[in-house]
Image 1 (cartoon, rainbow, N blue to C red):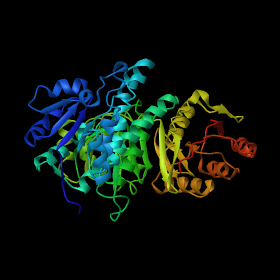
Image 2 (cartoon, one colour):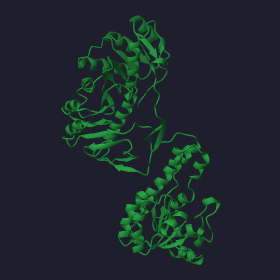
Image 3 (cartoon, rainbow, N blue to C red):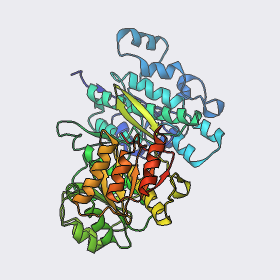
Length: 505
């Protein structure tokens, strides 16, 4: 391990001054010589710091309305110089001090974009000097400590409390964080200038998870969980927990404005969905959809959980329970089992993009935010769906959108009664949905069916007819659409097209 190096000099130039006072005593105690600019200099001048102006070092004041303050060889030379004979000789020749510590944050570009449409104000919040200082210090992590955000002040305080000494591992970790912040910042600027929708991900914030998909895999979440939900109780979340929680919240987002709705999911797939006038009925009927798969699953409601429902839920084993709130009595009941996770949902996801790592790279797509209203359904058969059937078809279409392809769902009385998902053929998905419905005691007569993609052949329609399905919603778009339409006409089944496929791979 490389010998620890000591911080003797620092460059400090920050937009946000809050939190900085926590590290000032360490700077003073270790007699660190500090160079600073503008508002940061004014802030630090209130303390007994060995303080110097950057403009006295460079010979230039802040110019162009503050656009240029630190962009100078006497600043960047002192940051980028290797602590070896050749570089140190050049610094001496040009009277350039070394900087062992760089504390710099960035103009609040993302926050400005969210708060105004004024392009001039937004462009002025594109940081140039700050980003350059952060990258320079991070590049030279072998000799320089970089603090790119107030989130790293606790780490800096630890170093200052240790006689202002740092080792290579500490500096390298801070450098990695700095480049993550830099990359995330540039992504937001690029997206704004290209008029693209942003990922809305804070890559500088991360949470270590219990493990990945399996215990031998490490898991980390990049982003901020606190704005989304508050964990009331239970063990720390694993990779699988978060994937399932995301699936549950995304599904409930479709039903958030419905009367009381409960969804039960297992391995990201809905195995029970029900909308009812009371919470206990919603729970019982969602559970009835597949009580076997519900074991160890994720449960979500769109309304506050009451004590009666909490008592009923407490009778089964589940991993995670999510709701916008819990009554005091319900919370007392549900927190008795310490390992089970309770999440209070603060808001629904708003990301405009989704991405996935594949082939040593990343693929990105728009979030599937498309919602087809029953008013947009296109009737294709002699028999038209009744108003009640159209409502049921819209319910079914929301469910099918959130199940793994190929998938078919059966809905009756605002309840998921059968589903087939993740099948390699659509007819297998259809058979699975009907078989599951019958297995759990549901009468499929009078039900409606939804498919996430078109029927390539009329076999699914024929199976639906045998099961008593009375109306079908599907995207359409097959060269054999007419065969399915003809089969519906022969079986007196109403069929509507949406024109929108909802594959979920």
